[in-house]
Image 1 (tube, chains in turn purple, red):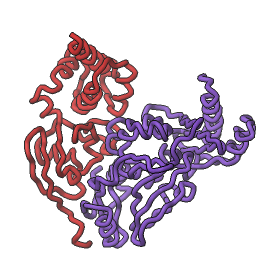
Image 2: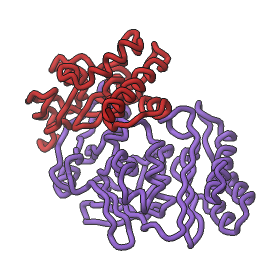
Image 3: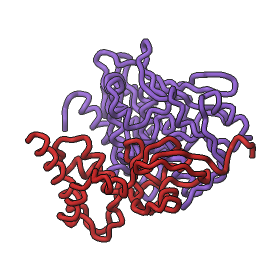
Image 4: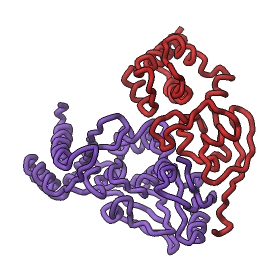
Length: 277
Length: 166
């Protein structure tokens, strides 16, 4: 269908965008790459929004290493992330995730900030952010603040962002010696949302496991992480099975999703150990 | 509604090498602007939620979905559609290969398919069939079963690589 927009304004800067959101009386909606928002508008899931187009704010795009963190601007597009050498060095999980996200033409416009703020529970980047222990950087009416990924994702399509806030960047720790980052997912067709997906990060401090498409938000599998830290893969698979409560829908049953989660954990651990099955 | 937000937006862009200025409705899709206002009906509006790829056009060098971009967002952009790419002969070898290999039947998907394939081919090198299939996975064709399309793109990749080394 055709999109229904209540109005449009092009933000020249983050400050300007915040002013526009403040003036929108709660009707404001941040438009970045638009690959989820415009689709939702087309399906009339979102009607009459006052669009604040931030896509021309050039200082929200780009990748840089700042001390012990890798900073990725919110408007950095999926295709740019997939091709960026700094991302490949410090957050190869994101590089690998890009190949799983939709199709080339979508990746050319979709942005990482948009994907995180949209918080689709079946999307790759929110789970990657959780597995990497990322920090979200937010500008709002009361100034800037940072939100840990663990506290950022709240519900289906719901984050800790308030009306009037803009996600400006994400930071992740730089890659440490011996670190391993792995993403595994099962989708029926290339570009489809995952039936289940799993991110595994191994650092000196221990394992981090985040899943997507198993519930209303990306999930940090703390039970499986503890079991894997103790070196017991079978216990980790059992713990994972117990700590997720996946939905049944037309794509897959809950039981199948739970089974797949265990399969993906075993695949990821096999890759971790260098066994390429 | 505050007057900071417009229901009509002024835009200025280049389309197929020519300057275009227009006042567009805030919610108008880029594909509808091209088709309805400029008469460029090559790229098609079909699923209108980013799945089928029939509306694929080139914006600032990238293949994008014309239904997932608003015309209002194209201010300052350089836009190419299959019409312009045909007039400049930029993809004539690809178009010839589509004809030769019977890579289209009804032709509805073809303009989007050409723009998507042209992006892949622009990277150069010999392409595997799996790479071609993956890159075109976001473009639906309901006639050909895809094999002939893969054939056509593969033959152009080989042809261009051969010319490069000759």
